[in-house]
Length: 224
Image (cartoon, rainbow, N blue to C red; front, side, top):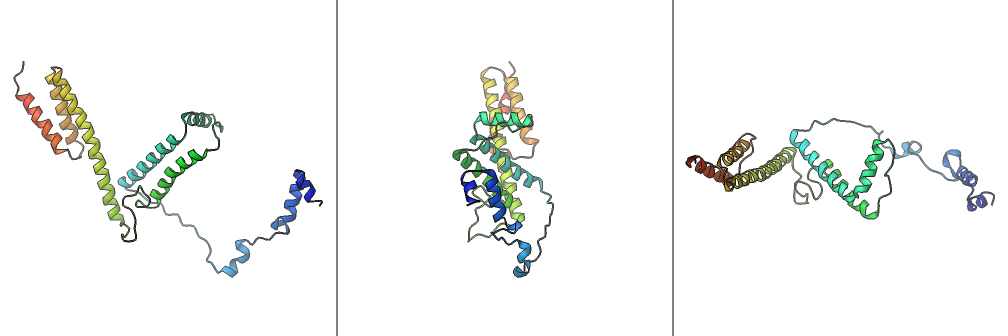
């Protein structure tokens, strides 16, 4: 009763007395075995830590950086702009302004991108955002196959980005023609060819045909 009554009344000293009575390290009523106490019974080898630094290739760095950026963007979408601004202001001031518990909805939206990032760091095939799903019938890809897959993905992404850029430049050339500015349209078509020819990325054949045909027609047209 001398221990129970102060705890029921909420006295801090009563809780400290209860912890002292139960604390294993102080010879209390509770008992807890540490690893040192049972090491001889378990027969486990001693724990060792080995740190091996890895040198990532350029394509591997691009893959992991892309995963990080996508997860960061998804995580930022999960939080309201006001909370992000308050957190950034508190960080600049050296304080913890803006820190608050996450709601259940925010927590779910934040954990999903973090899970994808953790899976990508384990292996590029792990998770729903991996290179190729791992199944019982499929063997994991070797590092050479993974690098080939990463190179293929990066090349396709570069070609898609270039296709969008060249389409915009060809569209700009068409607008300039409609505005009666053939010299500027010729410059736009030539920019398409110089852009595609100077970066090592394959140019879409239809875009190349469109550019060359229209550029040749403009160069052959009589100068007004």
